Length: 157
Image (cartoon, rainbow, N blue to C red; front, side, top):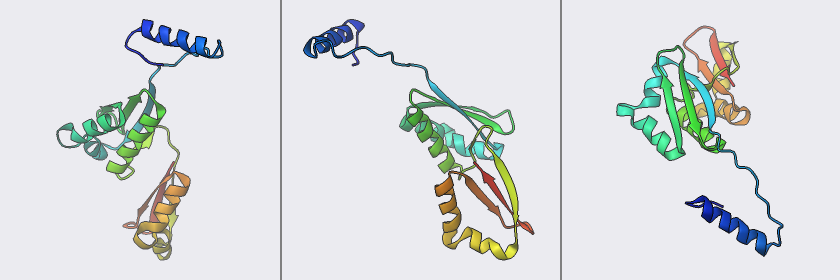
């Protein structure tokens, strides 16, 4: 039950108790904000902020969160705060999308493996389908760097 004034809420609770013959009871509601801290490179932070702060502002508005970016550290720290975990998760998803996955949860596990040149096309798959499937199924980010010999694959989860 929500209302503009505590008296209105108290009155509604009383009416519900009367109608249900006392079967309803109040439960405490946590009003503590949910906060998550993420990291991204200095190169990616410009994507997080966007031209004149437009990306940052749009994500805040669309997800009902507050996004603070500390550009002085390396990696940059992105702090997302919201009333609900779902809002914070949605903001994180939006940030991952605009940075092509360059934003990661602080303290995320990361591993770099080598991949033989002959296996790179199998790993990536047609149109990146294999990598995207691995990301979807595991929740980890897979970045293939085929400009090095041997190829390296960075897995972040």
